[in-house]
Image (tube, rainbow, N blue to C red; front, side):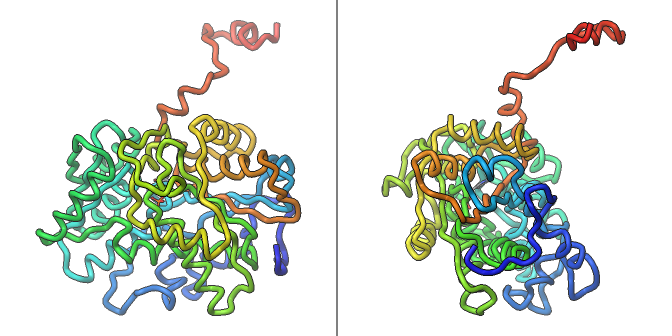
Length: 379
Ligand SMILES: Cc1ncc(COP(=O)(O)O)c(C=O)c1O
């Protein structure tokens, strides 16, 4: 890293921010609740309902194996699956739904590949609002659908893609008194930028490289805004290079043209025409970073390595950040002396079907210890 990061633990340590987070939970001034902690940098007013489910304050976990393998000075995983509904969406949604309630909305609507609907449904129920979610039929992971169902959202499964769903909800929000809470809602990006603040606050500096999966491109836009605001306020002396990664079958920002029929195992980023296209390109260019594509095989390899070697179980889309970093290393990019942070956007339990495709180390046994001994090869 380019500036001092005092007190960082070694690779055997748990996280970069144990001290900080202990402080964050103590006392009003040290709240981990992002709407309070970063209040002066967010569009929060005295009329904004300060409702929280415990979003933000997510761990920055130091790599124990891949860091050395990739030749990095330090590698961290920002565990955004630790947010209340299991994805990074809660950072933006807590603000977007609060602002909708503040404005007197009675219902929120969103298009979703799954995580946005889970988050919108949770915060809407907390605020006593109705949630309507429009999803591509049969194309969202089971766990995410379960969340929307449990929170009582009204679900409309359309015969089309996420891009179709987004077009539909934009049209509906123009005509009906519902608040649109996709990341085209500026409050979503505002809330999500707090992830960048937390990284700088915990490391005491910006990382050299920020690796992030890209779908609709709200999150890469939000992180770049967060780093840039801290930089302009002189809370940090440098900004990271933004390295965004799309799935190869859904990589319009790499090819430069929308993809009519996006395809990837990483359903969360199966998006052919990102709403925040310009934001992603600005983040890439202003940071002298890159946006590249990773194949489903590379995503699954990173997904398995994260779970088996780092103890981190994420959903496939989230592993695109590490897959991209591994790809850069394999292509000969010199990572020595650099600190990288991979944003791990969503929890593995959201997509159990993908996890169960891994060859399990599993045998059947009778319910006796000698039988289990035989099954284990201990006899
Ligand atoms: C788990 C996960 N990772 C990454 C993304 C991509 O984020 P964005 O659409 O802001 O680019 C999403 C979007 O739904 C997601 O759910």
